[in-house]
Image (cartoon, rainbow, N blue to C red):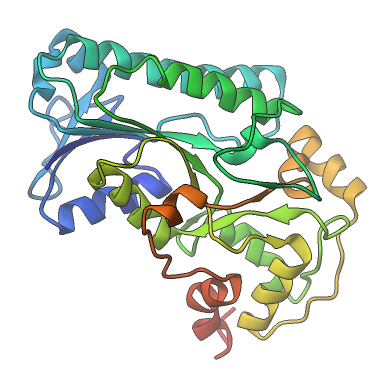
Length: 309
């Protein structure tokens, strides 16, 4: 297949691009710079890099592309000042809008567009369980971001649109997990806040496989939760990481400290939602890492139990 990826140099994007190349797809990374205009060599057979500006001038450069995966957006892992909030929202709306304009200008529309989204649209809760049939609950900033993000994605002309609602992606080489595991490496890990808040998560390998599944499966469309079938509380997550590392789980971090350090962004650690991947399971997707114990063991257990810190 010929597939275009925005955000293809990020944590999830890099894993996806590598998986696409390994199976023999032709991949176009859409970014701020072109590998050709910058004078850089194409890093791998089947991989090209084009800039937004080049595509806006010549949308025909992507003619024949069968799928577009949009992973572009400003990182939410920063203090949420008014300016940061504006960038977080606008970057997602702009990326989806650019793809809509690009696809509209193409003679042959992409068969599928997979647009990243977020499970934050369900709102925070310690008691409720959510799947793709649950209503949006705009209880906080991130829920509002996702609502606007998905509305922009709905305007992309494609035969099939998948809005992949991403949970916390766990990988040893990027994303949030290395920072989440750091206290345990220092023998200072423990629950954050009450420890009762839910963490819906997915291993990076399953995240990549689910992206491929959504691209390839013509019956998958609309909202799809990218989350493990076994979400856990913050306390359970910490205990699994501690067990995999052979470290103690004993040093609680009070909520007021997180709020003082991170401001409104502390909600990412102090609040959560229990989200299930009902649609992926219904369509036959099988998780390689369905439990946090298995995921933690794969990510950190083997090295840390043998003394690596």
